[in-house]
Structures are given as structure tokens and as C-alpha cells.
Length: 441
Image 1 (cartoon, rainbow, N blue to C red):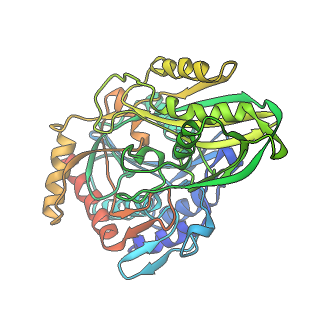
Image 2: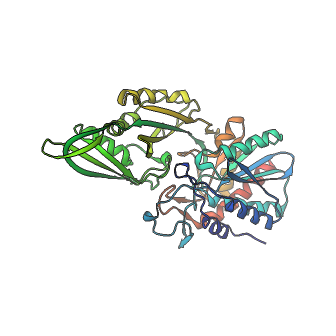
Image 3: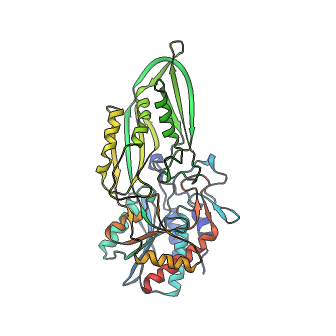
């Protein structure tokens, strides 16, 4: 039996694995069962692990040194069906391009690694091969990669190398920032005034790199609709906000649009109830995202702060910010609290995150070997820093030599997410050859 990664990807995309605590959504056990079924079909034993309702597929093959780990995730972010040209849960082929949610982030890597495992098992190998396919990377990874790391350490199976299939572009990723959450709470403050009502809409714009992934937002290049709305309010300090609506789906997904319902005070206008609490909160977005923060290490992408998820409940406005930086210290976020209280007295906030970041020296064996393998495959590649965080953050801080990698694709976290199919097959070759290069070394 020879597995086809495209067929596996087709099956996995058809399973909805959206992970969004904000919407009360998490992947079921259906995708893990499918992955385990495929692995059992090629004679590879795998078990399904569960923690806090999140599932992972895990297995250990062989024994001895070196210990090499393959890892990828199958959970995805939500979709806005109205923005898609195709059904996001049906893999749609158009020439060499395959569209579907998870096609590049990250089910293609799951498929490629399964096929590489089939080849490795059929050929035989020395050392230990660990594989893990997790279901909570999109919300931090504690119940997947974090749990598996602890399980491996308890068993004395700390990996020497981790090949994390959570990249794209067939580039060797050696640096990735840590992810943090910043949640703000502001009580509504209703007031009646006379004025003229109107609405103002703001749409996302990503002219260089099409994505909705918050970590990829580039100030000065991209337009974030909520940041633009805040700037509009600051330029028009006489305006009050009645309400806000938008394409809010998840804390690390930039909303596609935001619309404010506004009032321009006018003694001759209609009687309107405005919300001073919400008005102050939205005006505070600009100073919050421009608050200077000092991380531990340099990043090509600096520090990014984006407000992506809004919710009103029980008389309280909630606004969740996604933050990326090369640090694990929650204390470095404290200037945000000071900025918030200066602009919205009485507001409350909380911080989360700080698990770790990927920072692998470019001279490490795994990096050099990866470049050698790609050169042998005729792929022009390079060593880069990537924007988003990944589950490597659980292993790099404990001394595991890690890289992130993946096939070519785009629109990560956005509509019409896609994969270049030809690169999927080369990715299978890459994982297989890198494994043997590491074991021979």
C-alpha cells in the first residue's frame, strides 16, 4: 500500500476541525480517528490521547538514539463562508492549487508526515521516531504539544531533534515569536444625547501578503479594520459610539470588517442612547497598539499587537488582543495596563500566554541538513524567521533542536486558503530524507 498525501488531505479537509473558544467550538475525535485509521492501515500503531476535551494522535517507533520527532496539527481557525469562492470543507483542485480550510495550515503537513512515516517504516531505520498530530495548536497547544512533551520527558524520551510541520514556503524556519493574549473589560456607560446617526464601515486590507493571521499583520503595510476605526474616532473626538459589529471570529484572526454605529451631537438631532464606555475603549485601541514593549530578543517582525475579537455580554464590553514577541515574560506586557488605565479609567484586563519561542542557531546540524536535503530536491530555500507562533515553543526551551517546515501555500487563517499541490509531494520527500540524514549523522 502506497499512500497518496493529496488523498489524505482531501479526507482531512472534509472533517471540520475548527478550534475557537470564543465561539464554543473545538475539534471532535473524528479527525484523530481518521488519522489513526490511516496509520493502522500501514501497520503503524498509534494511540489517541485526550486532555481537557482535546485529542492528539501519538506513537513511538523504534528505539535508541537519535530520537527524532515529527509533529503537525490538524485543528484550524474559523471560516467566514461568504468570503470563500469554494466550500472550505471540500478540497477543491484548480490546476496545481488546492483550496480548503487547513490546506496549508496545517493538514497538508499531517498528510505529508504520514506518508513519510510509511516510507521510513517500509525501508527500516535506526534510532527512535516519535510522531504527534495535535488538535489544539490554534489555541496555544498546552493540551496537545505541551501534554506530549511532558509525557516524553517522564518516559525519558526527550527528542534530540524536532521537525515541526507547521511552516510554509518550503523554507527552513528557525525563529518564531511567543504568543500572548491581552483581554480588556470595560463596563457600558449609557447616556442620552441629541444627534445625527450614521454608520461607518472599515475593511481589512492586506496588499502584499494575503492572510488573516494576526501574527502576519504588518503595520505600515496592512490595514486592520478595528485599528482604522479607532483612528477615525480619535480624528473625530466629538463623535460617540452607539454600537459595533464586525467579522469577529477568534483572537488571532484579523476581522474582515468592522462597522461602527455613530452619533454626531446636534441639538436639533434625534434623541439617541450612546455608550461612553465603548467609545473610550475603541478610542484607546490606537495608544494600546502603539505602546512600546521591550522583549528579551530581537525579532525581524518586532512586537505586534492586534485587537481581533470583540464581545458584548452582561453590560460589559470585551476586547481581545493578540500579541507576538521574542520573550516569555508576562511582565513585559505591564505597560499595556498603564496605557489602558490612562485612556479608560476603571477598565480591567488580564494577560495570558508566554509559553516559549523558537530560536534555533543557523549552524545547528538540523538546519544544515535540511538545506542539504532541499538542495538535493532541487528546491531553492533559505533560513528564515516566520511570523506566527508554533508548537516548537514547547520543545526549543528545553534544548531540543527544532525547525518548522511546510509546503507552498497561502491565505493562512483567511478566505480561500490554498496549497500548491506539487510542493506537497516534495514535502513528503523532504521529511523522509531529512529523517535519514539525521539518523546517519
